Image 1: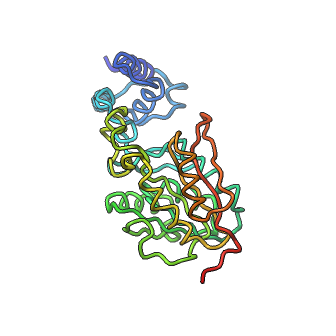
Image 2: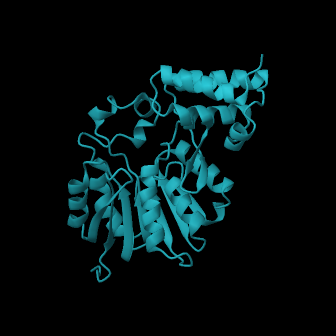
Image 3: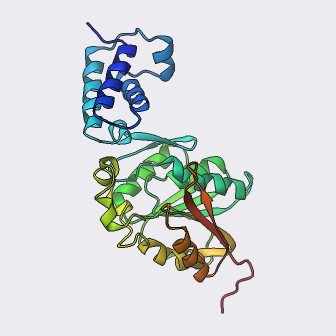
Length: 289
């Protein structure tokens, strides 16, 4: 006898719970929706709709993969971020709600009609850059990443969102080759996890996320030591930066940006009240010799 949407959801939830996974209710719903080509409204409004044998087999595969701790975003190949939907692969960091703190801050600082150019260092899937451009139609952006595989994902996402005409994507080593005083805004979610901590992370992160996007060196601060002076170099006077940090890195990262000459350096909290984004500006009165 075929499973119904309701029974499929209940069965998937029970299997994920038995495996000790966090968030089984939402994960089960997302897997059922994808496997059965259904929506949340379908599960609520038409709970007794039967799955086809192909859909049942697909769901069983999805649940088995999730029990093996593969992230839902990798199973489905997509992840929502801010107000956009992004393609996601094993070659990019799965976008997280914590990172939306950067987007929220930027949108408050740059009015909707304002024309500005933004640089995203370590662009990955394009989450930060594309979320900003989707909300600011007069803005243009450049995304830089050392991974060609990540850039391919970002290109696909830009095209899917109709933003390809306002985005350039470049393979590069952070700001290498970029001119001084070039950008109104620089954003980044660099690798910031200490090398020896990566092995202790949940498998969804430590095993399935790209190590290149995680490993911040012995103390997690390697990227910031490079980025702080370089971000200040490529920012226009008066320009803004916003970089994601680990929950315990506020003091160190703020100090690096102050030492590089940043003004108004402060740290924003995420929804869990953890330190999450260091932001500031380049002194608008700064002149170069």
